[in-house]
Image 1 (tube, rainbow, N blue to C red):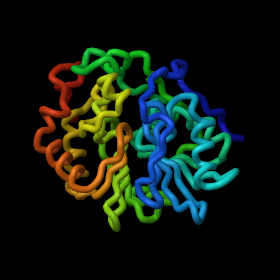
Image 2 (spheres, helix red, strand yellow):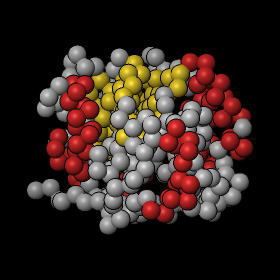
Image 3 (cartoon, helix red, strand yellow):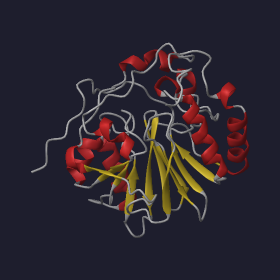
Image 4 (spheres, rainbow, N blue to C red):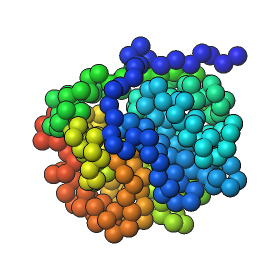
Length: 285
């Protein structure tokens, strides 16, 4: 008998949205990016075969929408082979329990995310004092307590392979969270970056609402180790991705992506790192 899964006591719907909400983009024939309010989920798989994987699980209360999106793309009663989590923040696991109950599929995440996904440890508190706009100020209302997926959560293989995504490798990209991962496919240099970097200034409400495209580091109010975040961006830039789906903002590709990522690496301290905030000077252990 499965131990009952549960969200933290602070789990709740967050009334934030953008003009991109409800819009899906065919990034590649087998990569589909869909925006739930202010965050992206990704469906990897060919609609012709019906085999697919869901990357991340949206905002609280979005399970029905995610199920509808998958069935529209892959057919009635379709279900993924697995759910892969880039990390466990509330806006990436918001519908996970309902989805697992509905589909009965395994969930995979990095070993270092396990405390936050098995009810053992809360993430550090969001920082409303960090340099940024209204979203940063709103961050204390975001759910922060750990969810508990019981024995439905599994650790990603240590060799970098991704279950049911044979052409992809996972890459440890910490900083935003300890066990944050990104997914990369060598053959076409497709990158699913999670929140290692994003293509919208996620701290500013106006930019979130309008989805103004602008490369940025990870969302500031939830990023705790900036030194690691910078190393992660350097690592991803070295892969020379041709296209990137990020956790927030529109997908970016080609020369715009190359130039933007190079700029982010070269000017990370100016572009990404806030001028002030309680985690700004926190060092790696």
